[in-house]
Length: 278
Image (tube, rainbow, N blue to C red; front, side, top):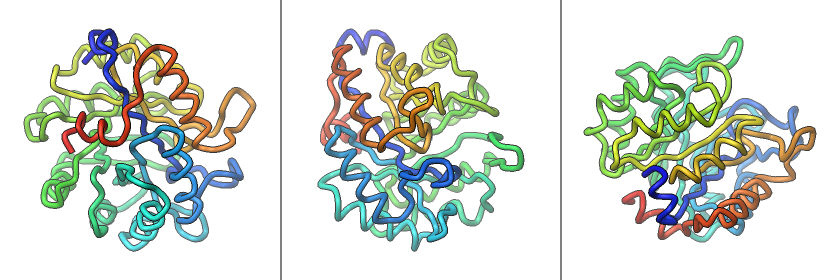
């Protein structure tokens, strides 16, 4: 990976993160929350050029859901609405007890991918996610049993340390997400992205995402470093300063345009599976 990958014009995988688990319709009214709304957003993102869907589930009242039953409802609706998307379930656990964290992995069929937070995280005043080494090990064990590829979420340099120490436990190519924003995430700046990428082994595929106003600059920088990218209303409710995004698809469409302008071809789903070894 790295700048050589950009020069080689390697395809870029676009992930759409549709809803998240914190902000809701009280923040932006068109954020998808119900299974039907999430499925409609997924179908639009597939048409726009995304190949991976990063999925959360919500309760009927809009609050985050962790149960396998609710994830099953969401996934069933999404599969019916789309043709051939890679489904990636979130196991992120802000304010969730450890015993619920594996629930999103238990749908039938299992998702092809799932997120795996690689260390502790604070982002909000009273919300934290401990992500102990034992929990990471336990979740990865379930993923191995169910043949689910982990997306290793690295929120800061310490998480990269944790990942590098156990990287040989993950099937090649490991897939990591480098995350930038506030709280205990990496300080959002292009040089910090470059530093993290410089510390990745050559056999690692990496994805870049930024929260809020950092989504566009960090993902665009990642394109020049040979990385993949994630956009969507989970991470950023705005299209530009002071203007809410019309939809998740609008953010995907912009990512496709930028990738095309800088001559990174956008991977279709079959190419994404080949790149990720799915």
